[in-house]
Length: 328
Image (cartoon, rainbow, N blue to C red; front, side, top):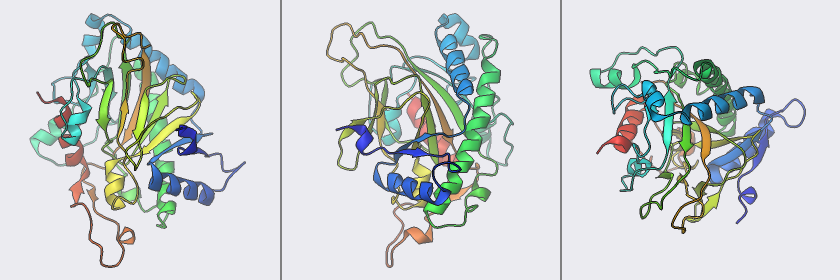
C-alpha cells in the first residue's frame, strides 16, 4: 500500500493556500485515521534543520571514546548519549524485544524546569543537559532547533484545539511549562545479521501529545501500523516534517485520535551480512507541563460512554514509560 494514500501532506502556509480551519479539518481526519500526517511549509528554516542533522551526524560518526563525554549521568536519566542497544522501545508496551539497533542523543528544555516533586522525579527531569565537546556548534544547533520545534508544536496544539471544537487556547495552560525532549536517533551501518526479531527501533507509541520528526532524506525504515494491523512505510521529503499523535492526546480524546504503533525496520533483512545504510532522524517529543493532569475531554464522550483511561499526570507517565525501556 502506498503511504501517500493514507498519510496526508498538510500545507501550513495558510496565508497563501489554506485557512487555519481548513488545516484543522485535515488534521482531524488524519488524527482519527492513522494518527500520522506530514506538514509542508511549516515555517522552520531548512538551514536550521540541515545544520542540526549535520551536527548530529558528525557527533555519531566520532569514535565511541569521544561520544562517551556526553553520556547520560545515570542509566535512568533521559538526557545525553545512549549506546547502541541500550534501549528497547517495545518494552514500553510490555513486549519483550532484543535491544534496538540505534544510538541516540537526547536533550531536555533549554531553560531548566523547576516544579515541586519527589526526589525520584527531580532526578529524572531536573538533571541538566549533557553536551559533547565536538562538533563545536552542536549545542547551539540543537538548542536553536529545540526552540523552533517548541514554536511549531504550540502552533499545532492550537490547530488541534480547533479540530476538537475547543477554544483555540484550550491547551495553553497545560503546555505553559512543557518538559519536551529533542532526540537524535542514529541507526548505524550493520555489519552482521541481527538477532531474531531485532529492529532498529521496536514497535512503540510515543508518550506525549505529539512528535515532530525530521528525516535525513527519503530513507526507508519508518513504518506505522494502521487500524487494521497492517504495517505501512512512511516516506517524506527532507523539507517536510512528519507529525504523529502521542499517548496523552489519545487519552485526552478517549482514543478518538490514534496514537499509532510505529517502528524502524531493517531493510534487506534476509542477508547474512546486512548492507542497510545508516539512518538519521531528529524527533521532538512535545510533553505537557510535568504536573498537567490528563483526563478525557467531555466533548469526546458520547452519551452514556465512560472514559477508556484513568487520569494520569504528564510527567509521571513519561518517566514510567521511559524507565520501562531501559531497565534490565
